[in-house]
Length: 168
Image (tube, rainbow, N blue to C red; front, side, top):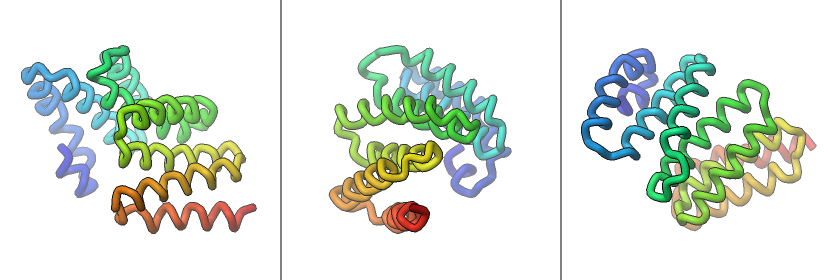
């Protein structure tokens, strides 16, 4: 599934998802099942099926509940929820989802995921008109990338800060 997604062959990835979901279920690993929900949401989002994306996220979050061992998967689902909600124009709900994901990633020390969520939070803050806090979120994401050596996304994030500064 991931290979098809990386190639932007989302319809094919979606067609392969039931087999991946079945394998996840048979493994007995709840986190893998939640990852299948997250992947479905991501694929549906790329196919502009926001309702399906949101449904997959909500299904995964209901499954995750508040089980501590599933917190990383829950946070990843919350990021997908935030992305979809922002694209649906529900910026305040998106901000809440990002905030919850950030608390989880930060407490668990999952720095790269925290950086990804902070960058998304910055985008949602821009959408809400809060440019100053958006810059703070983008810069915090950049700082984490520098600390973890993740240079892949650094250029895009620096561009985000520049665009917001230019818009002020």
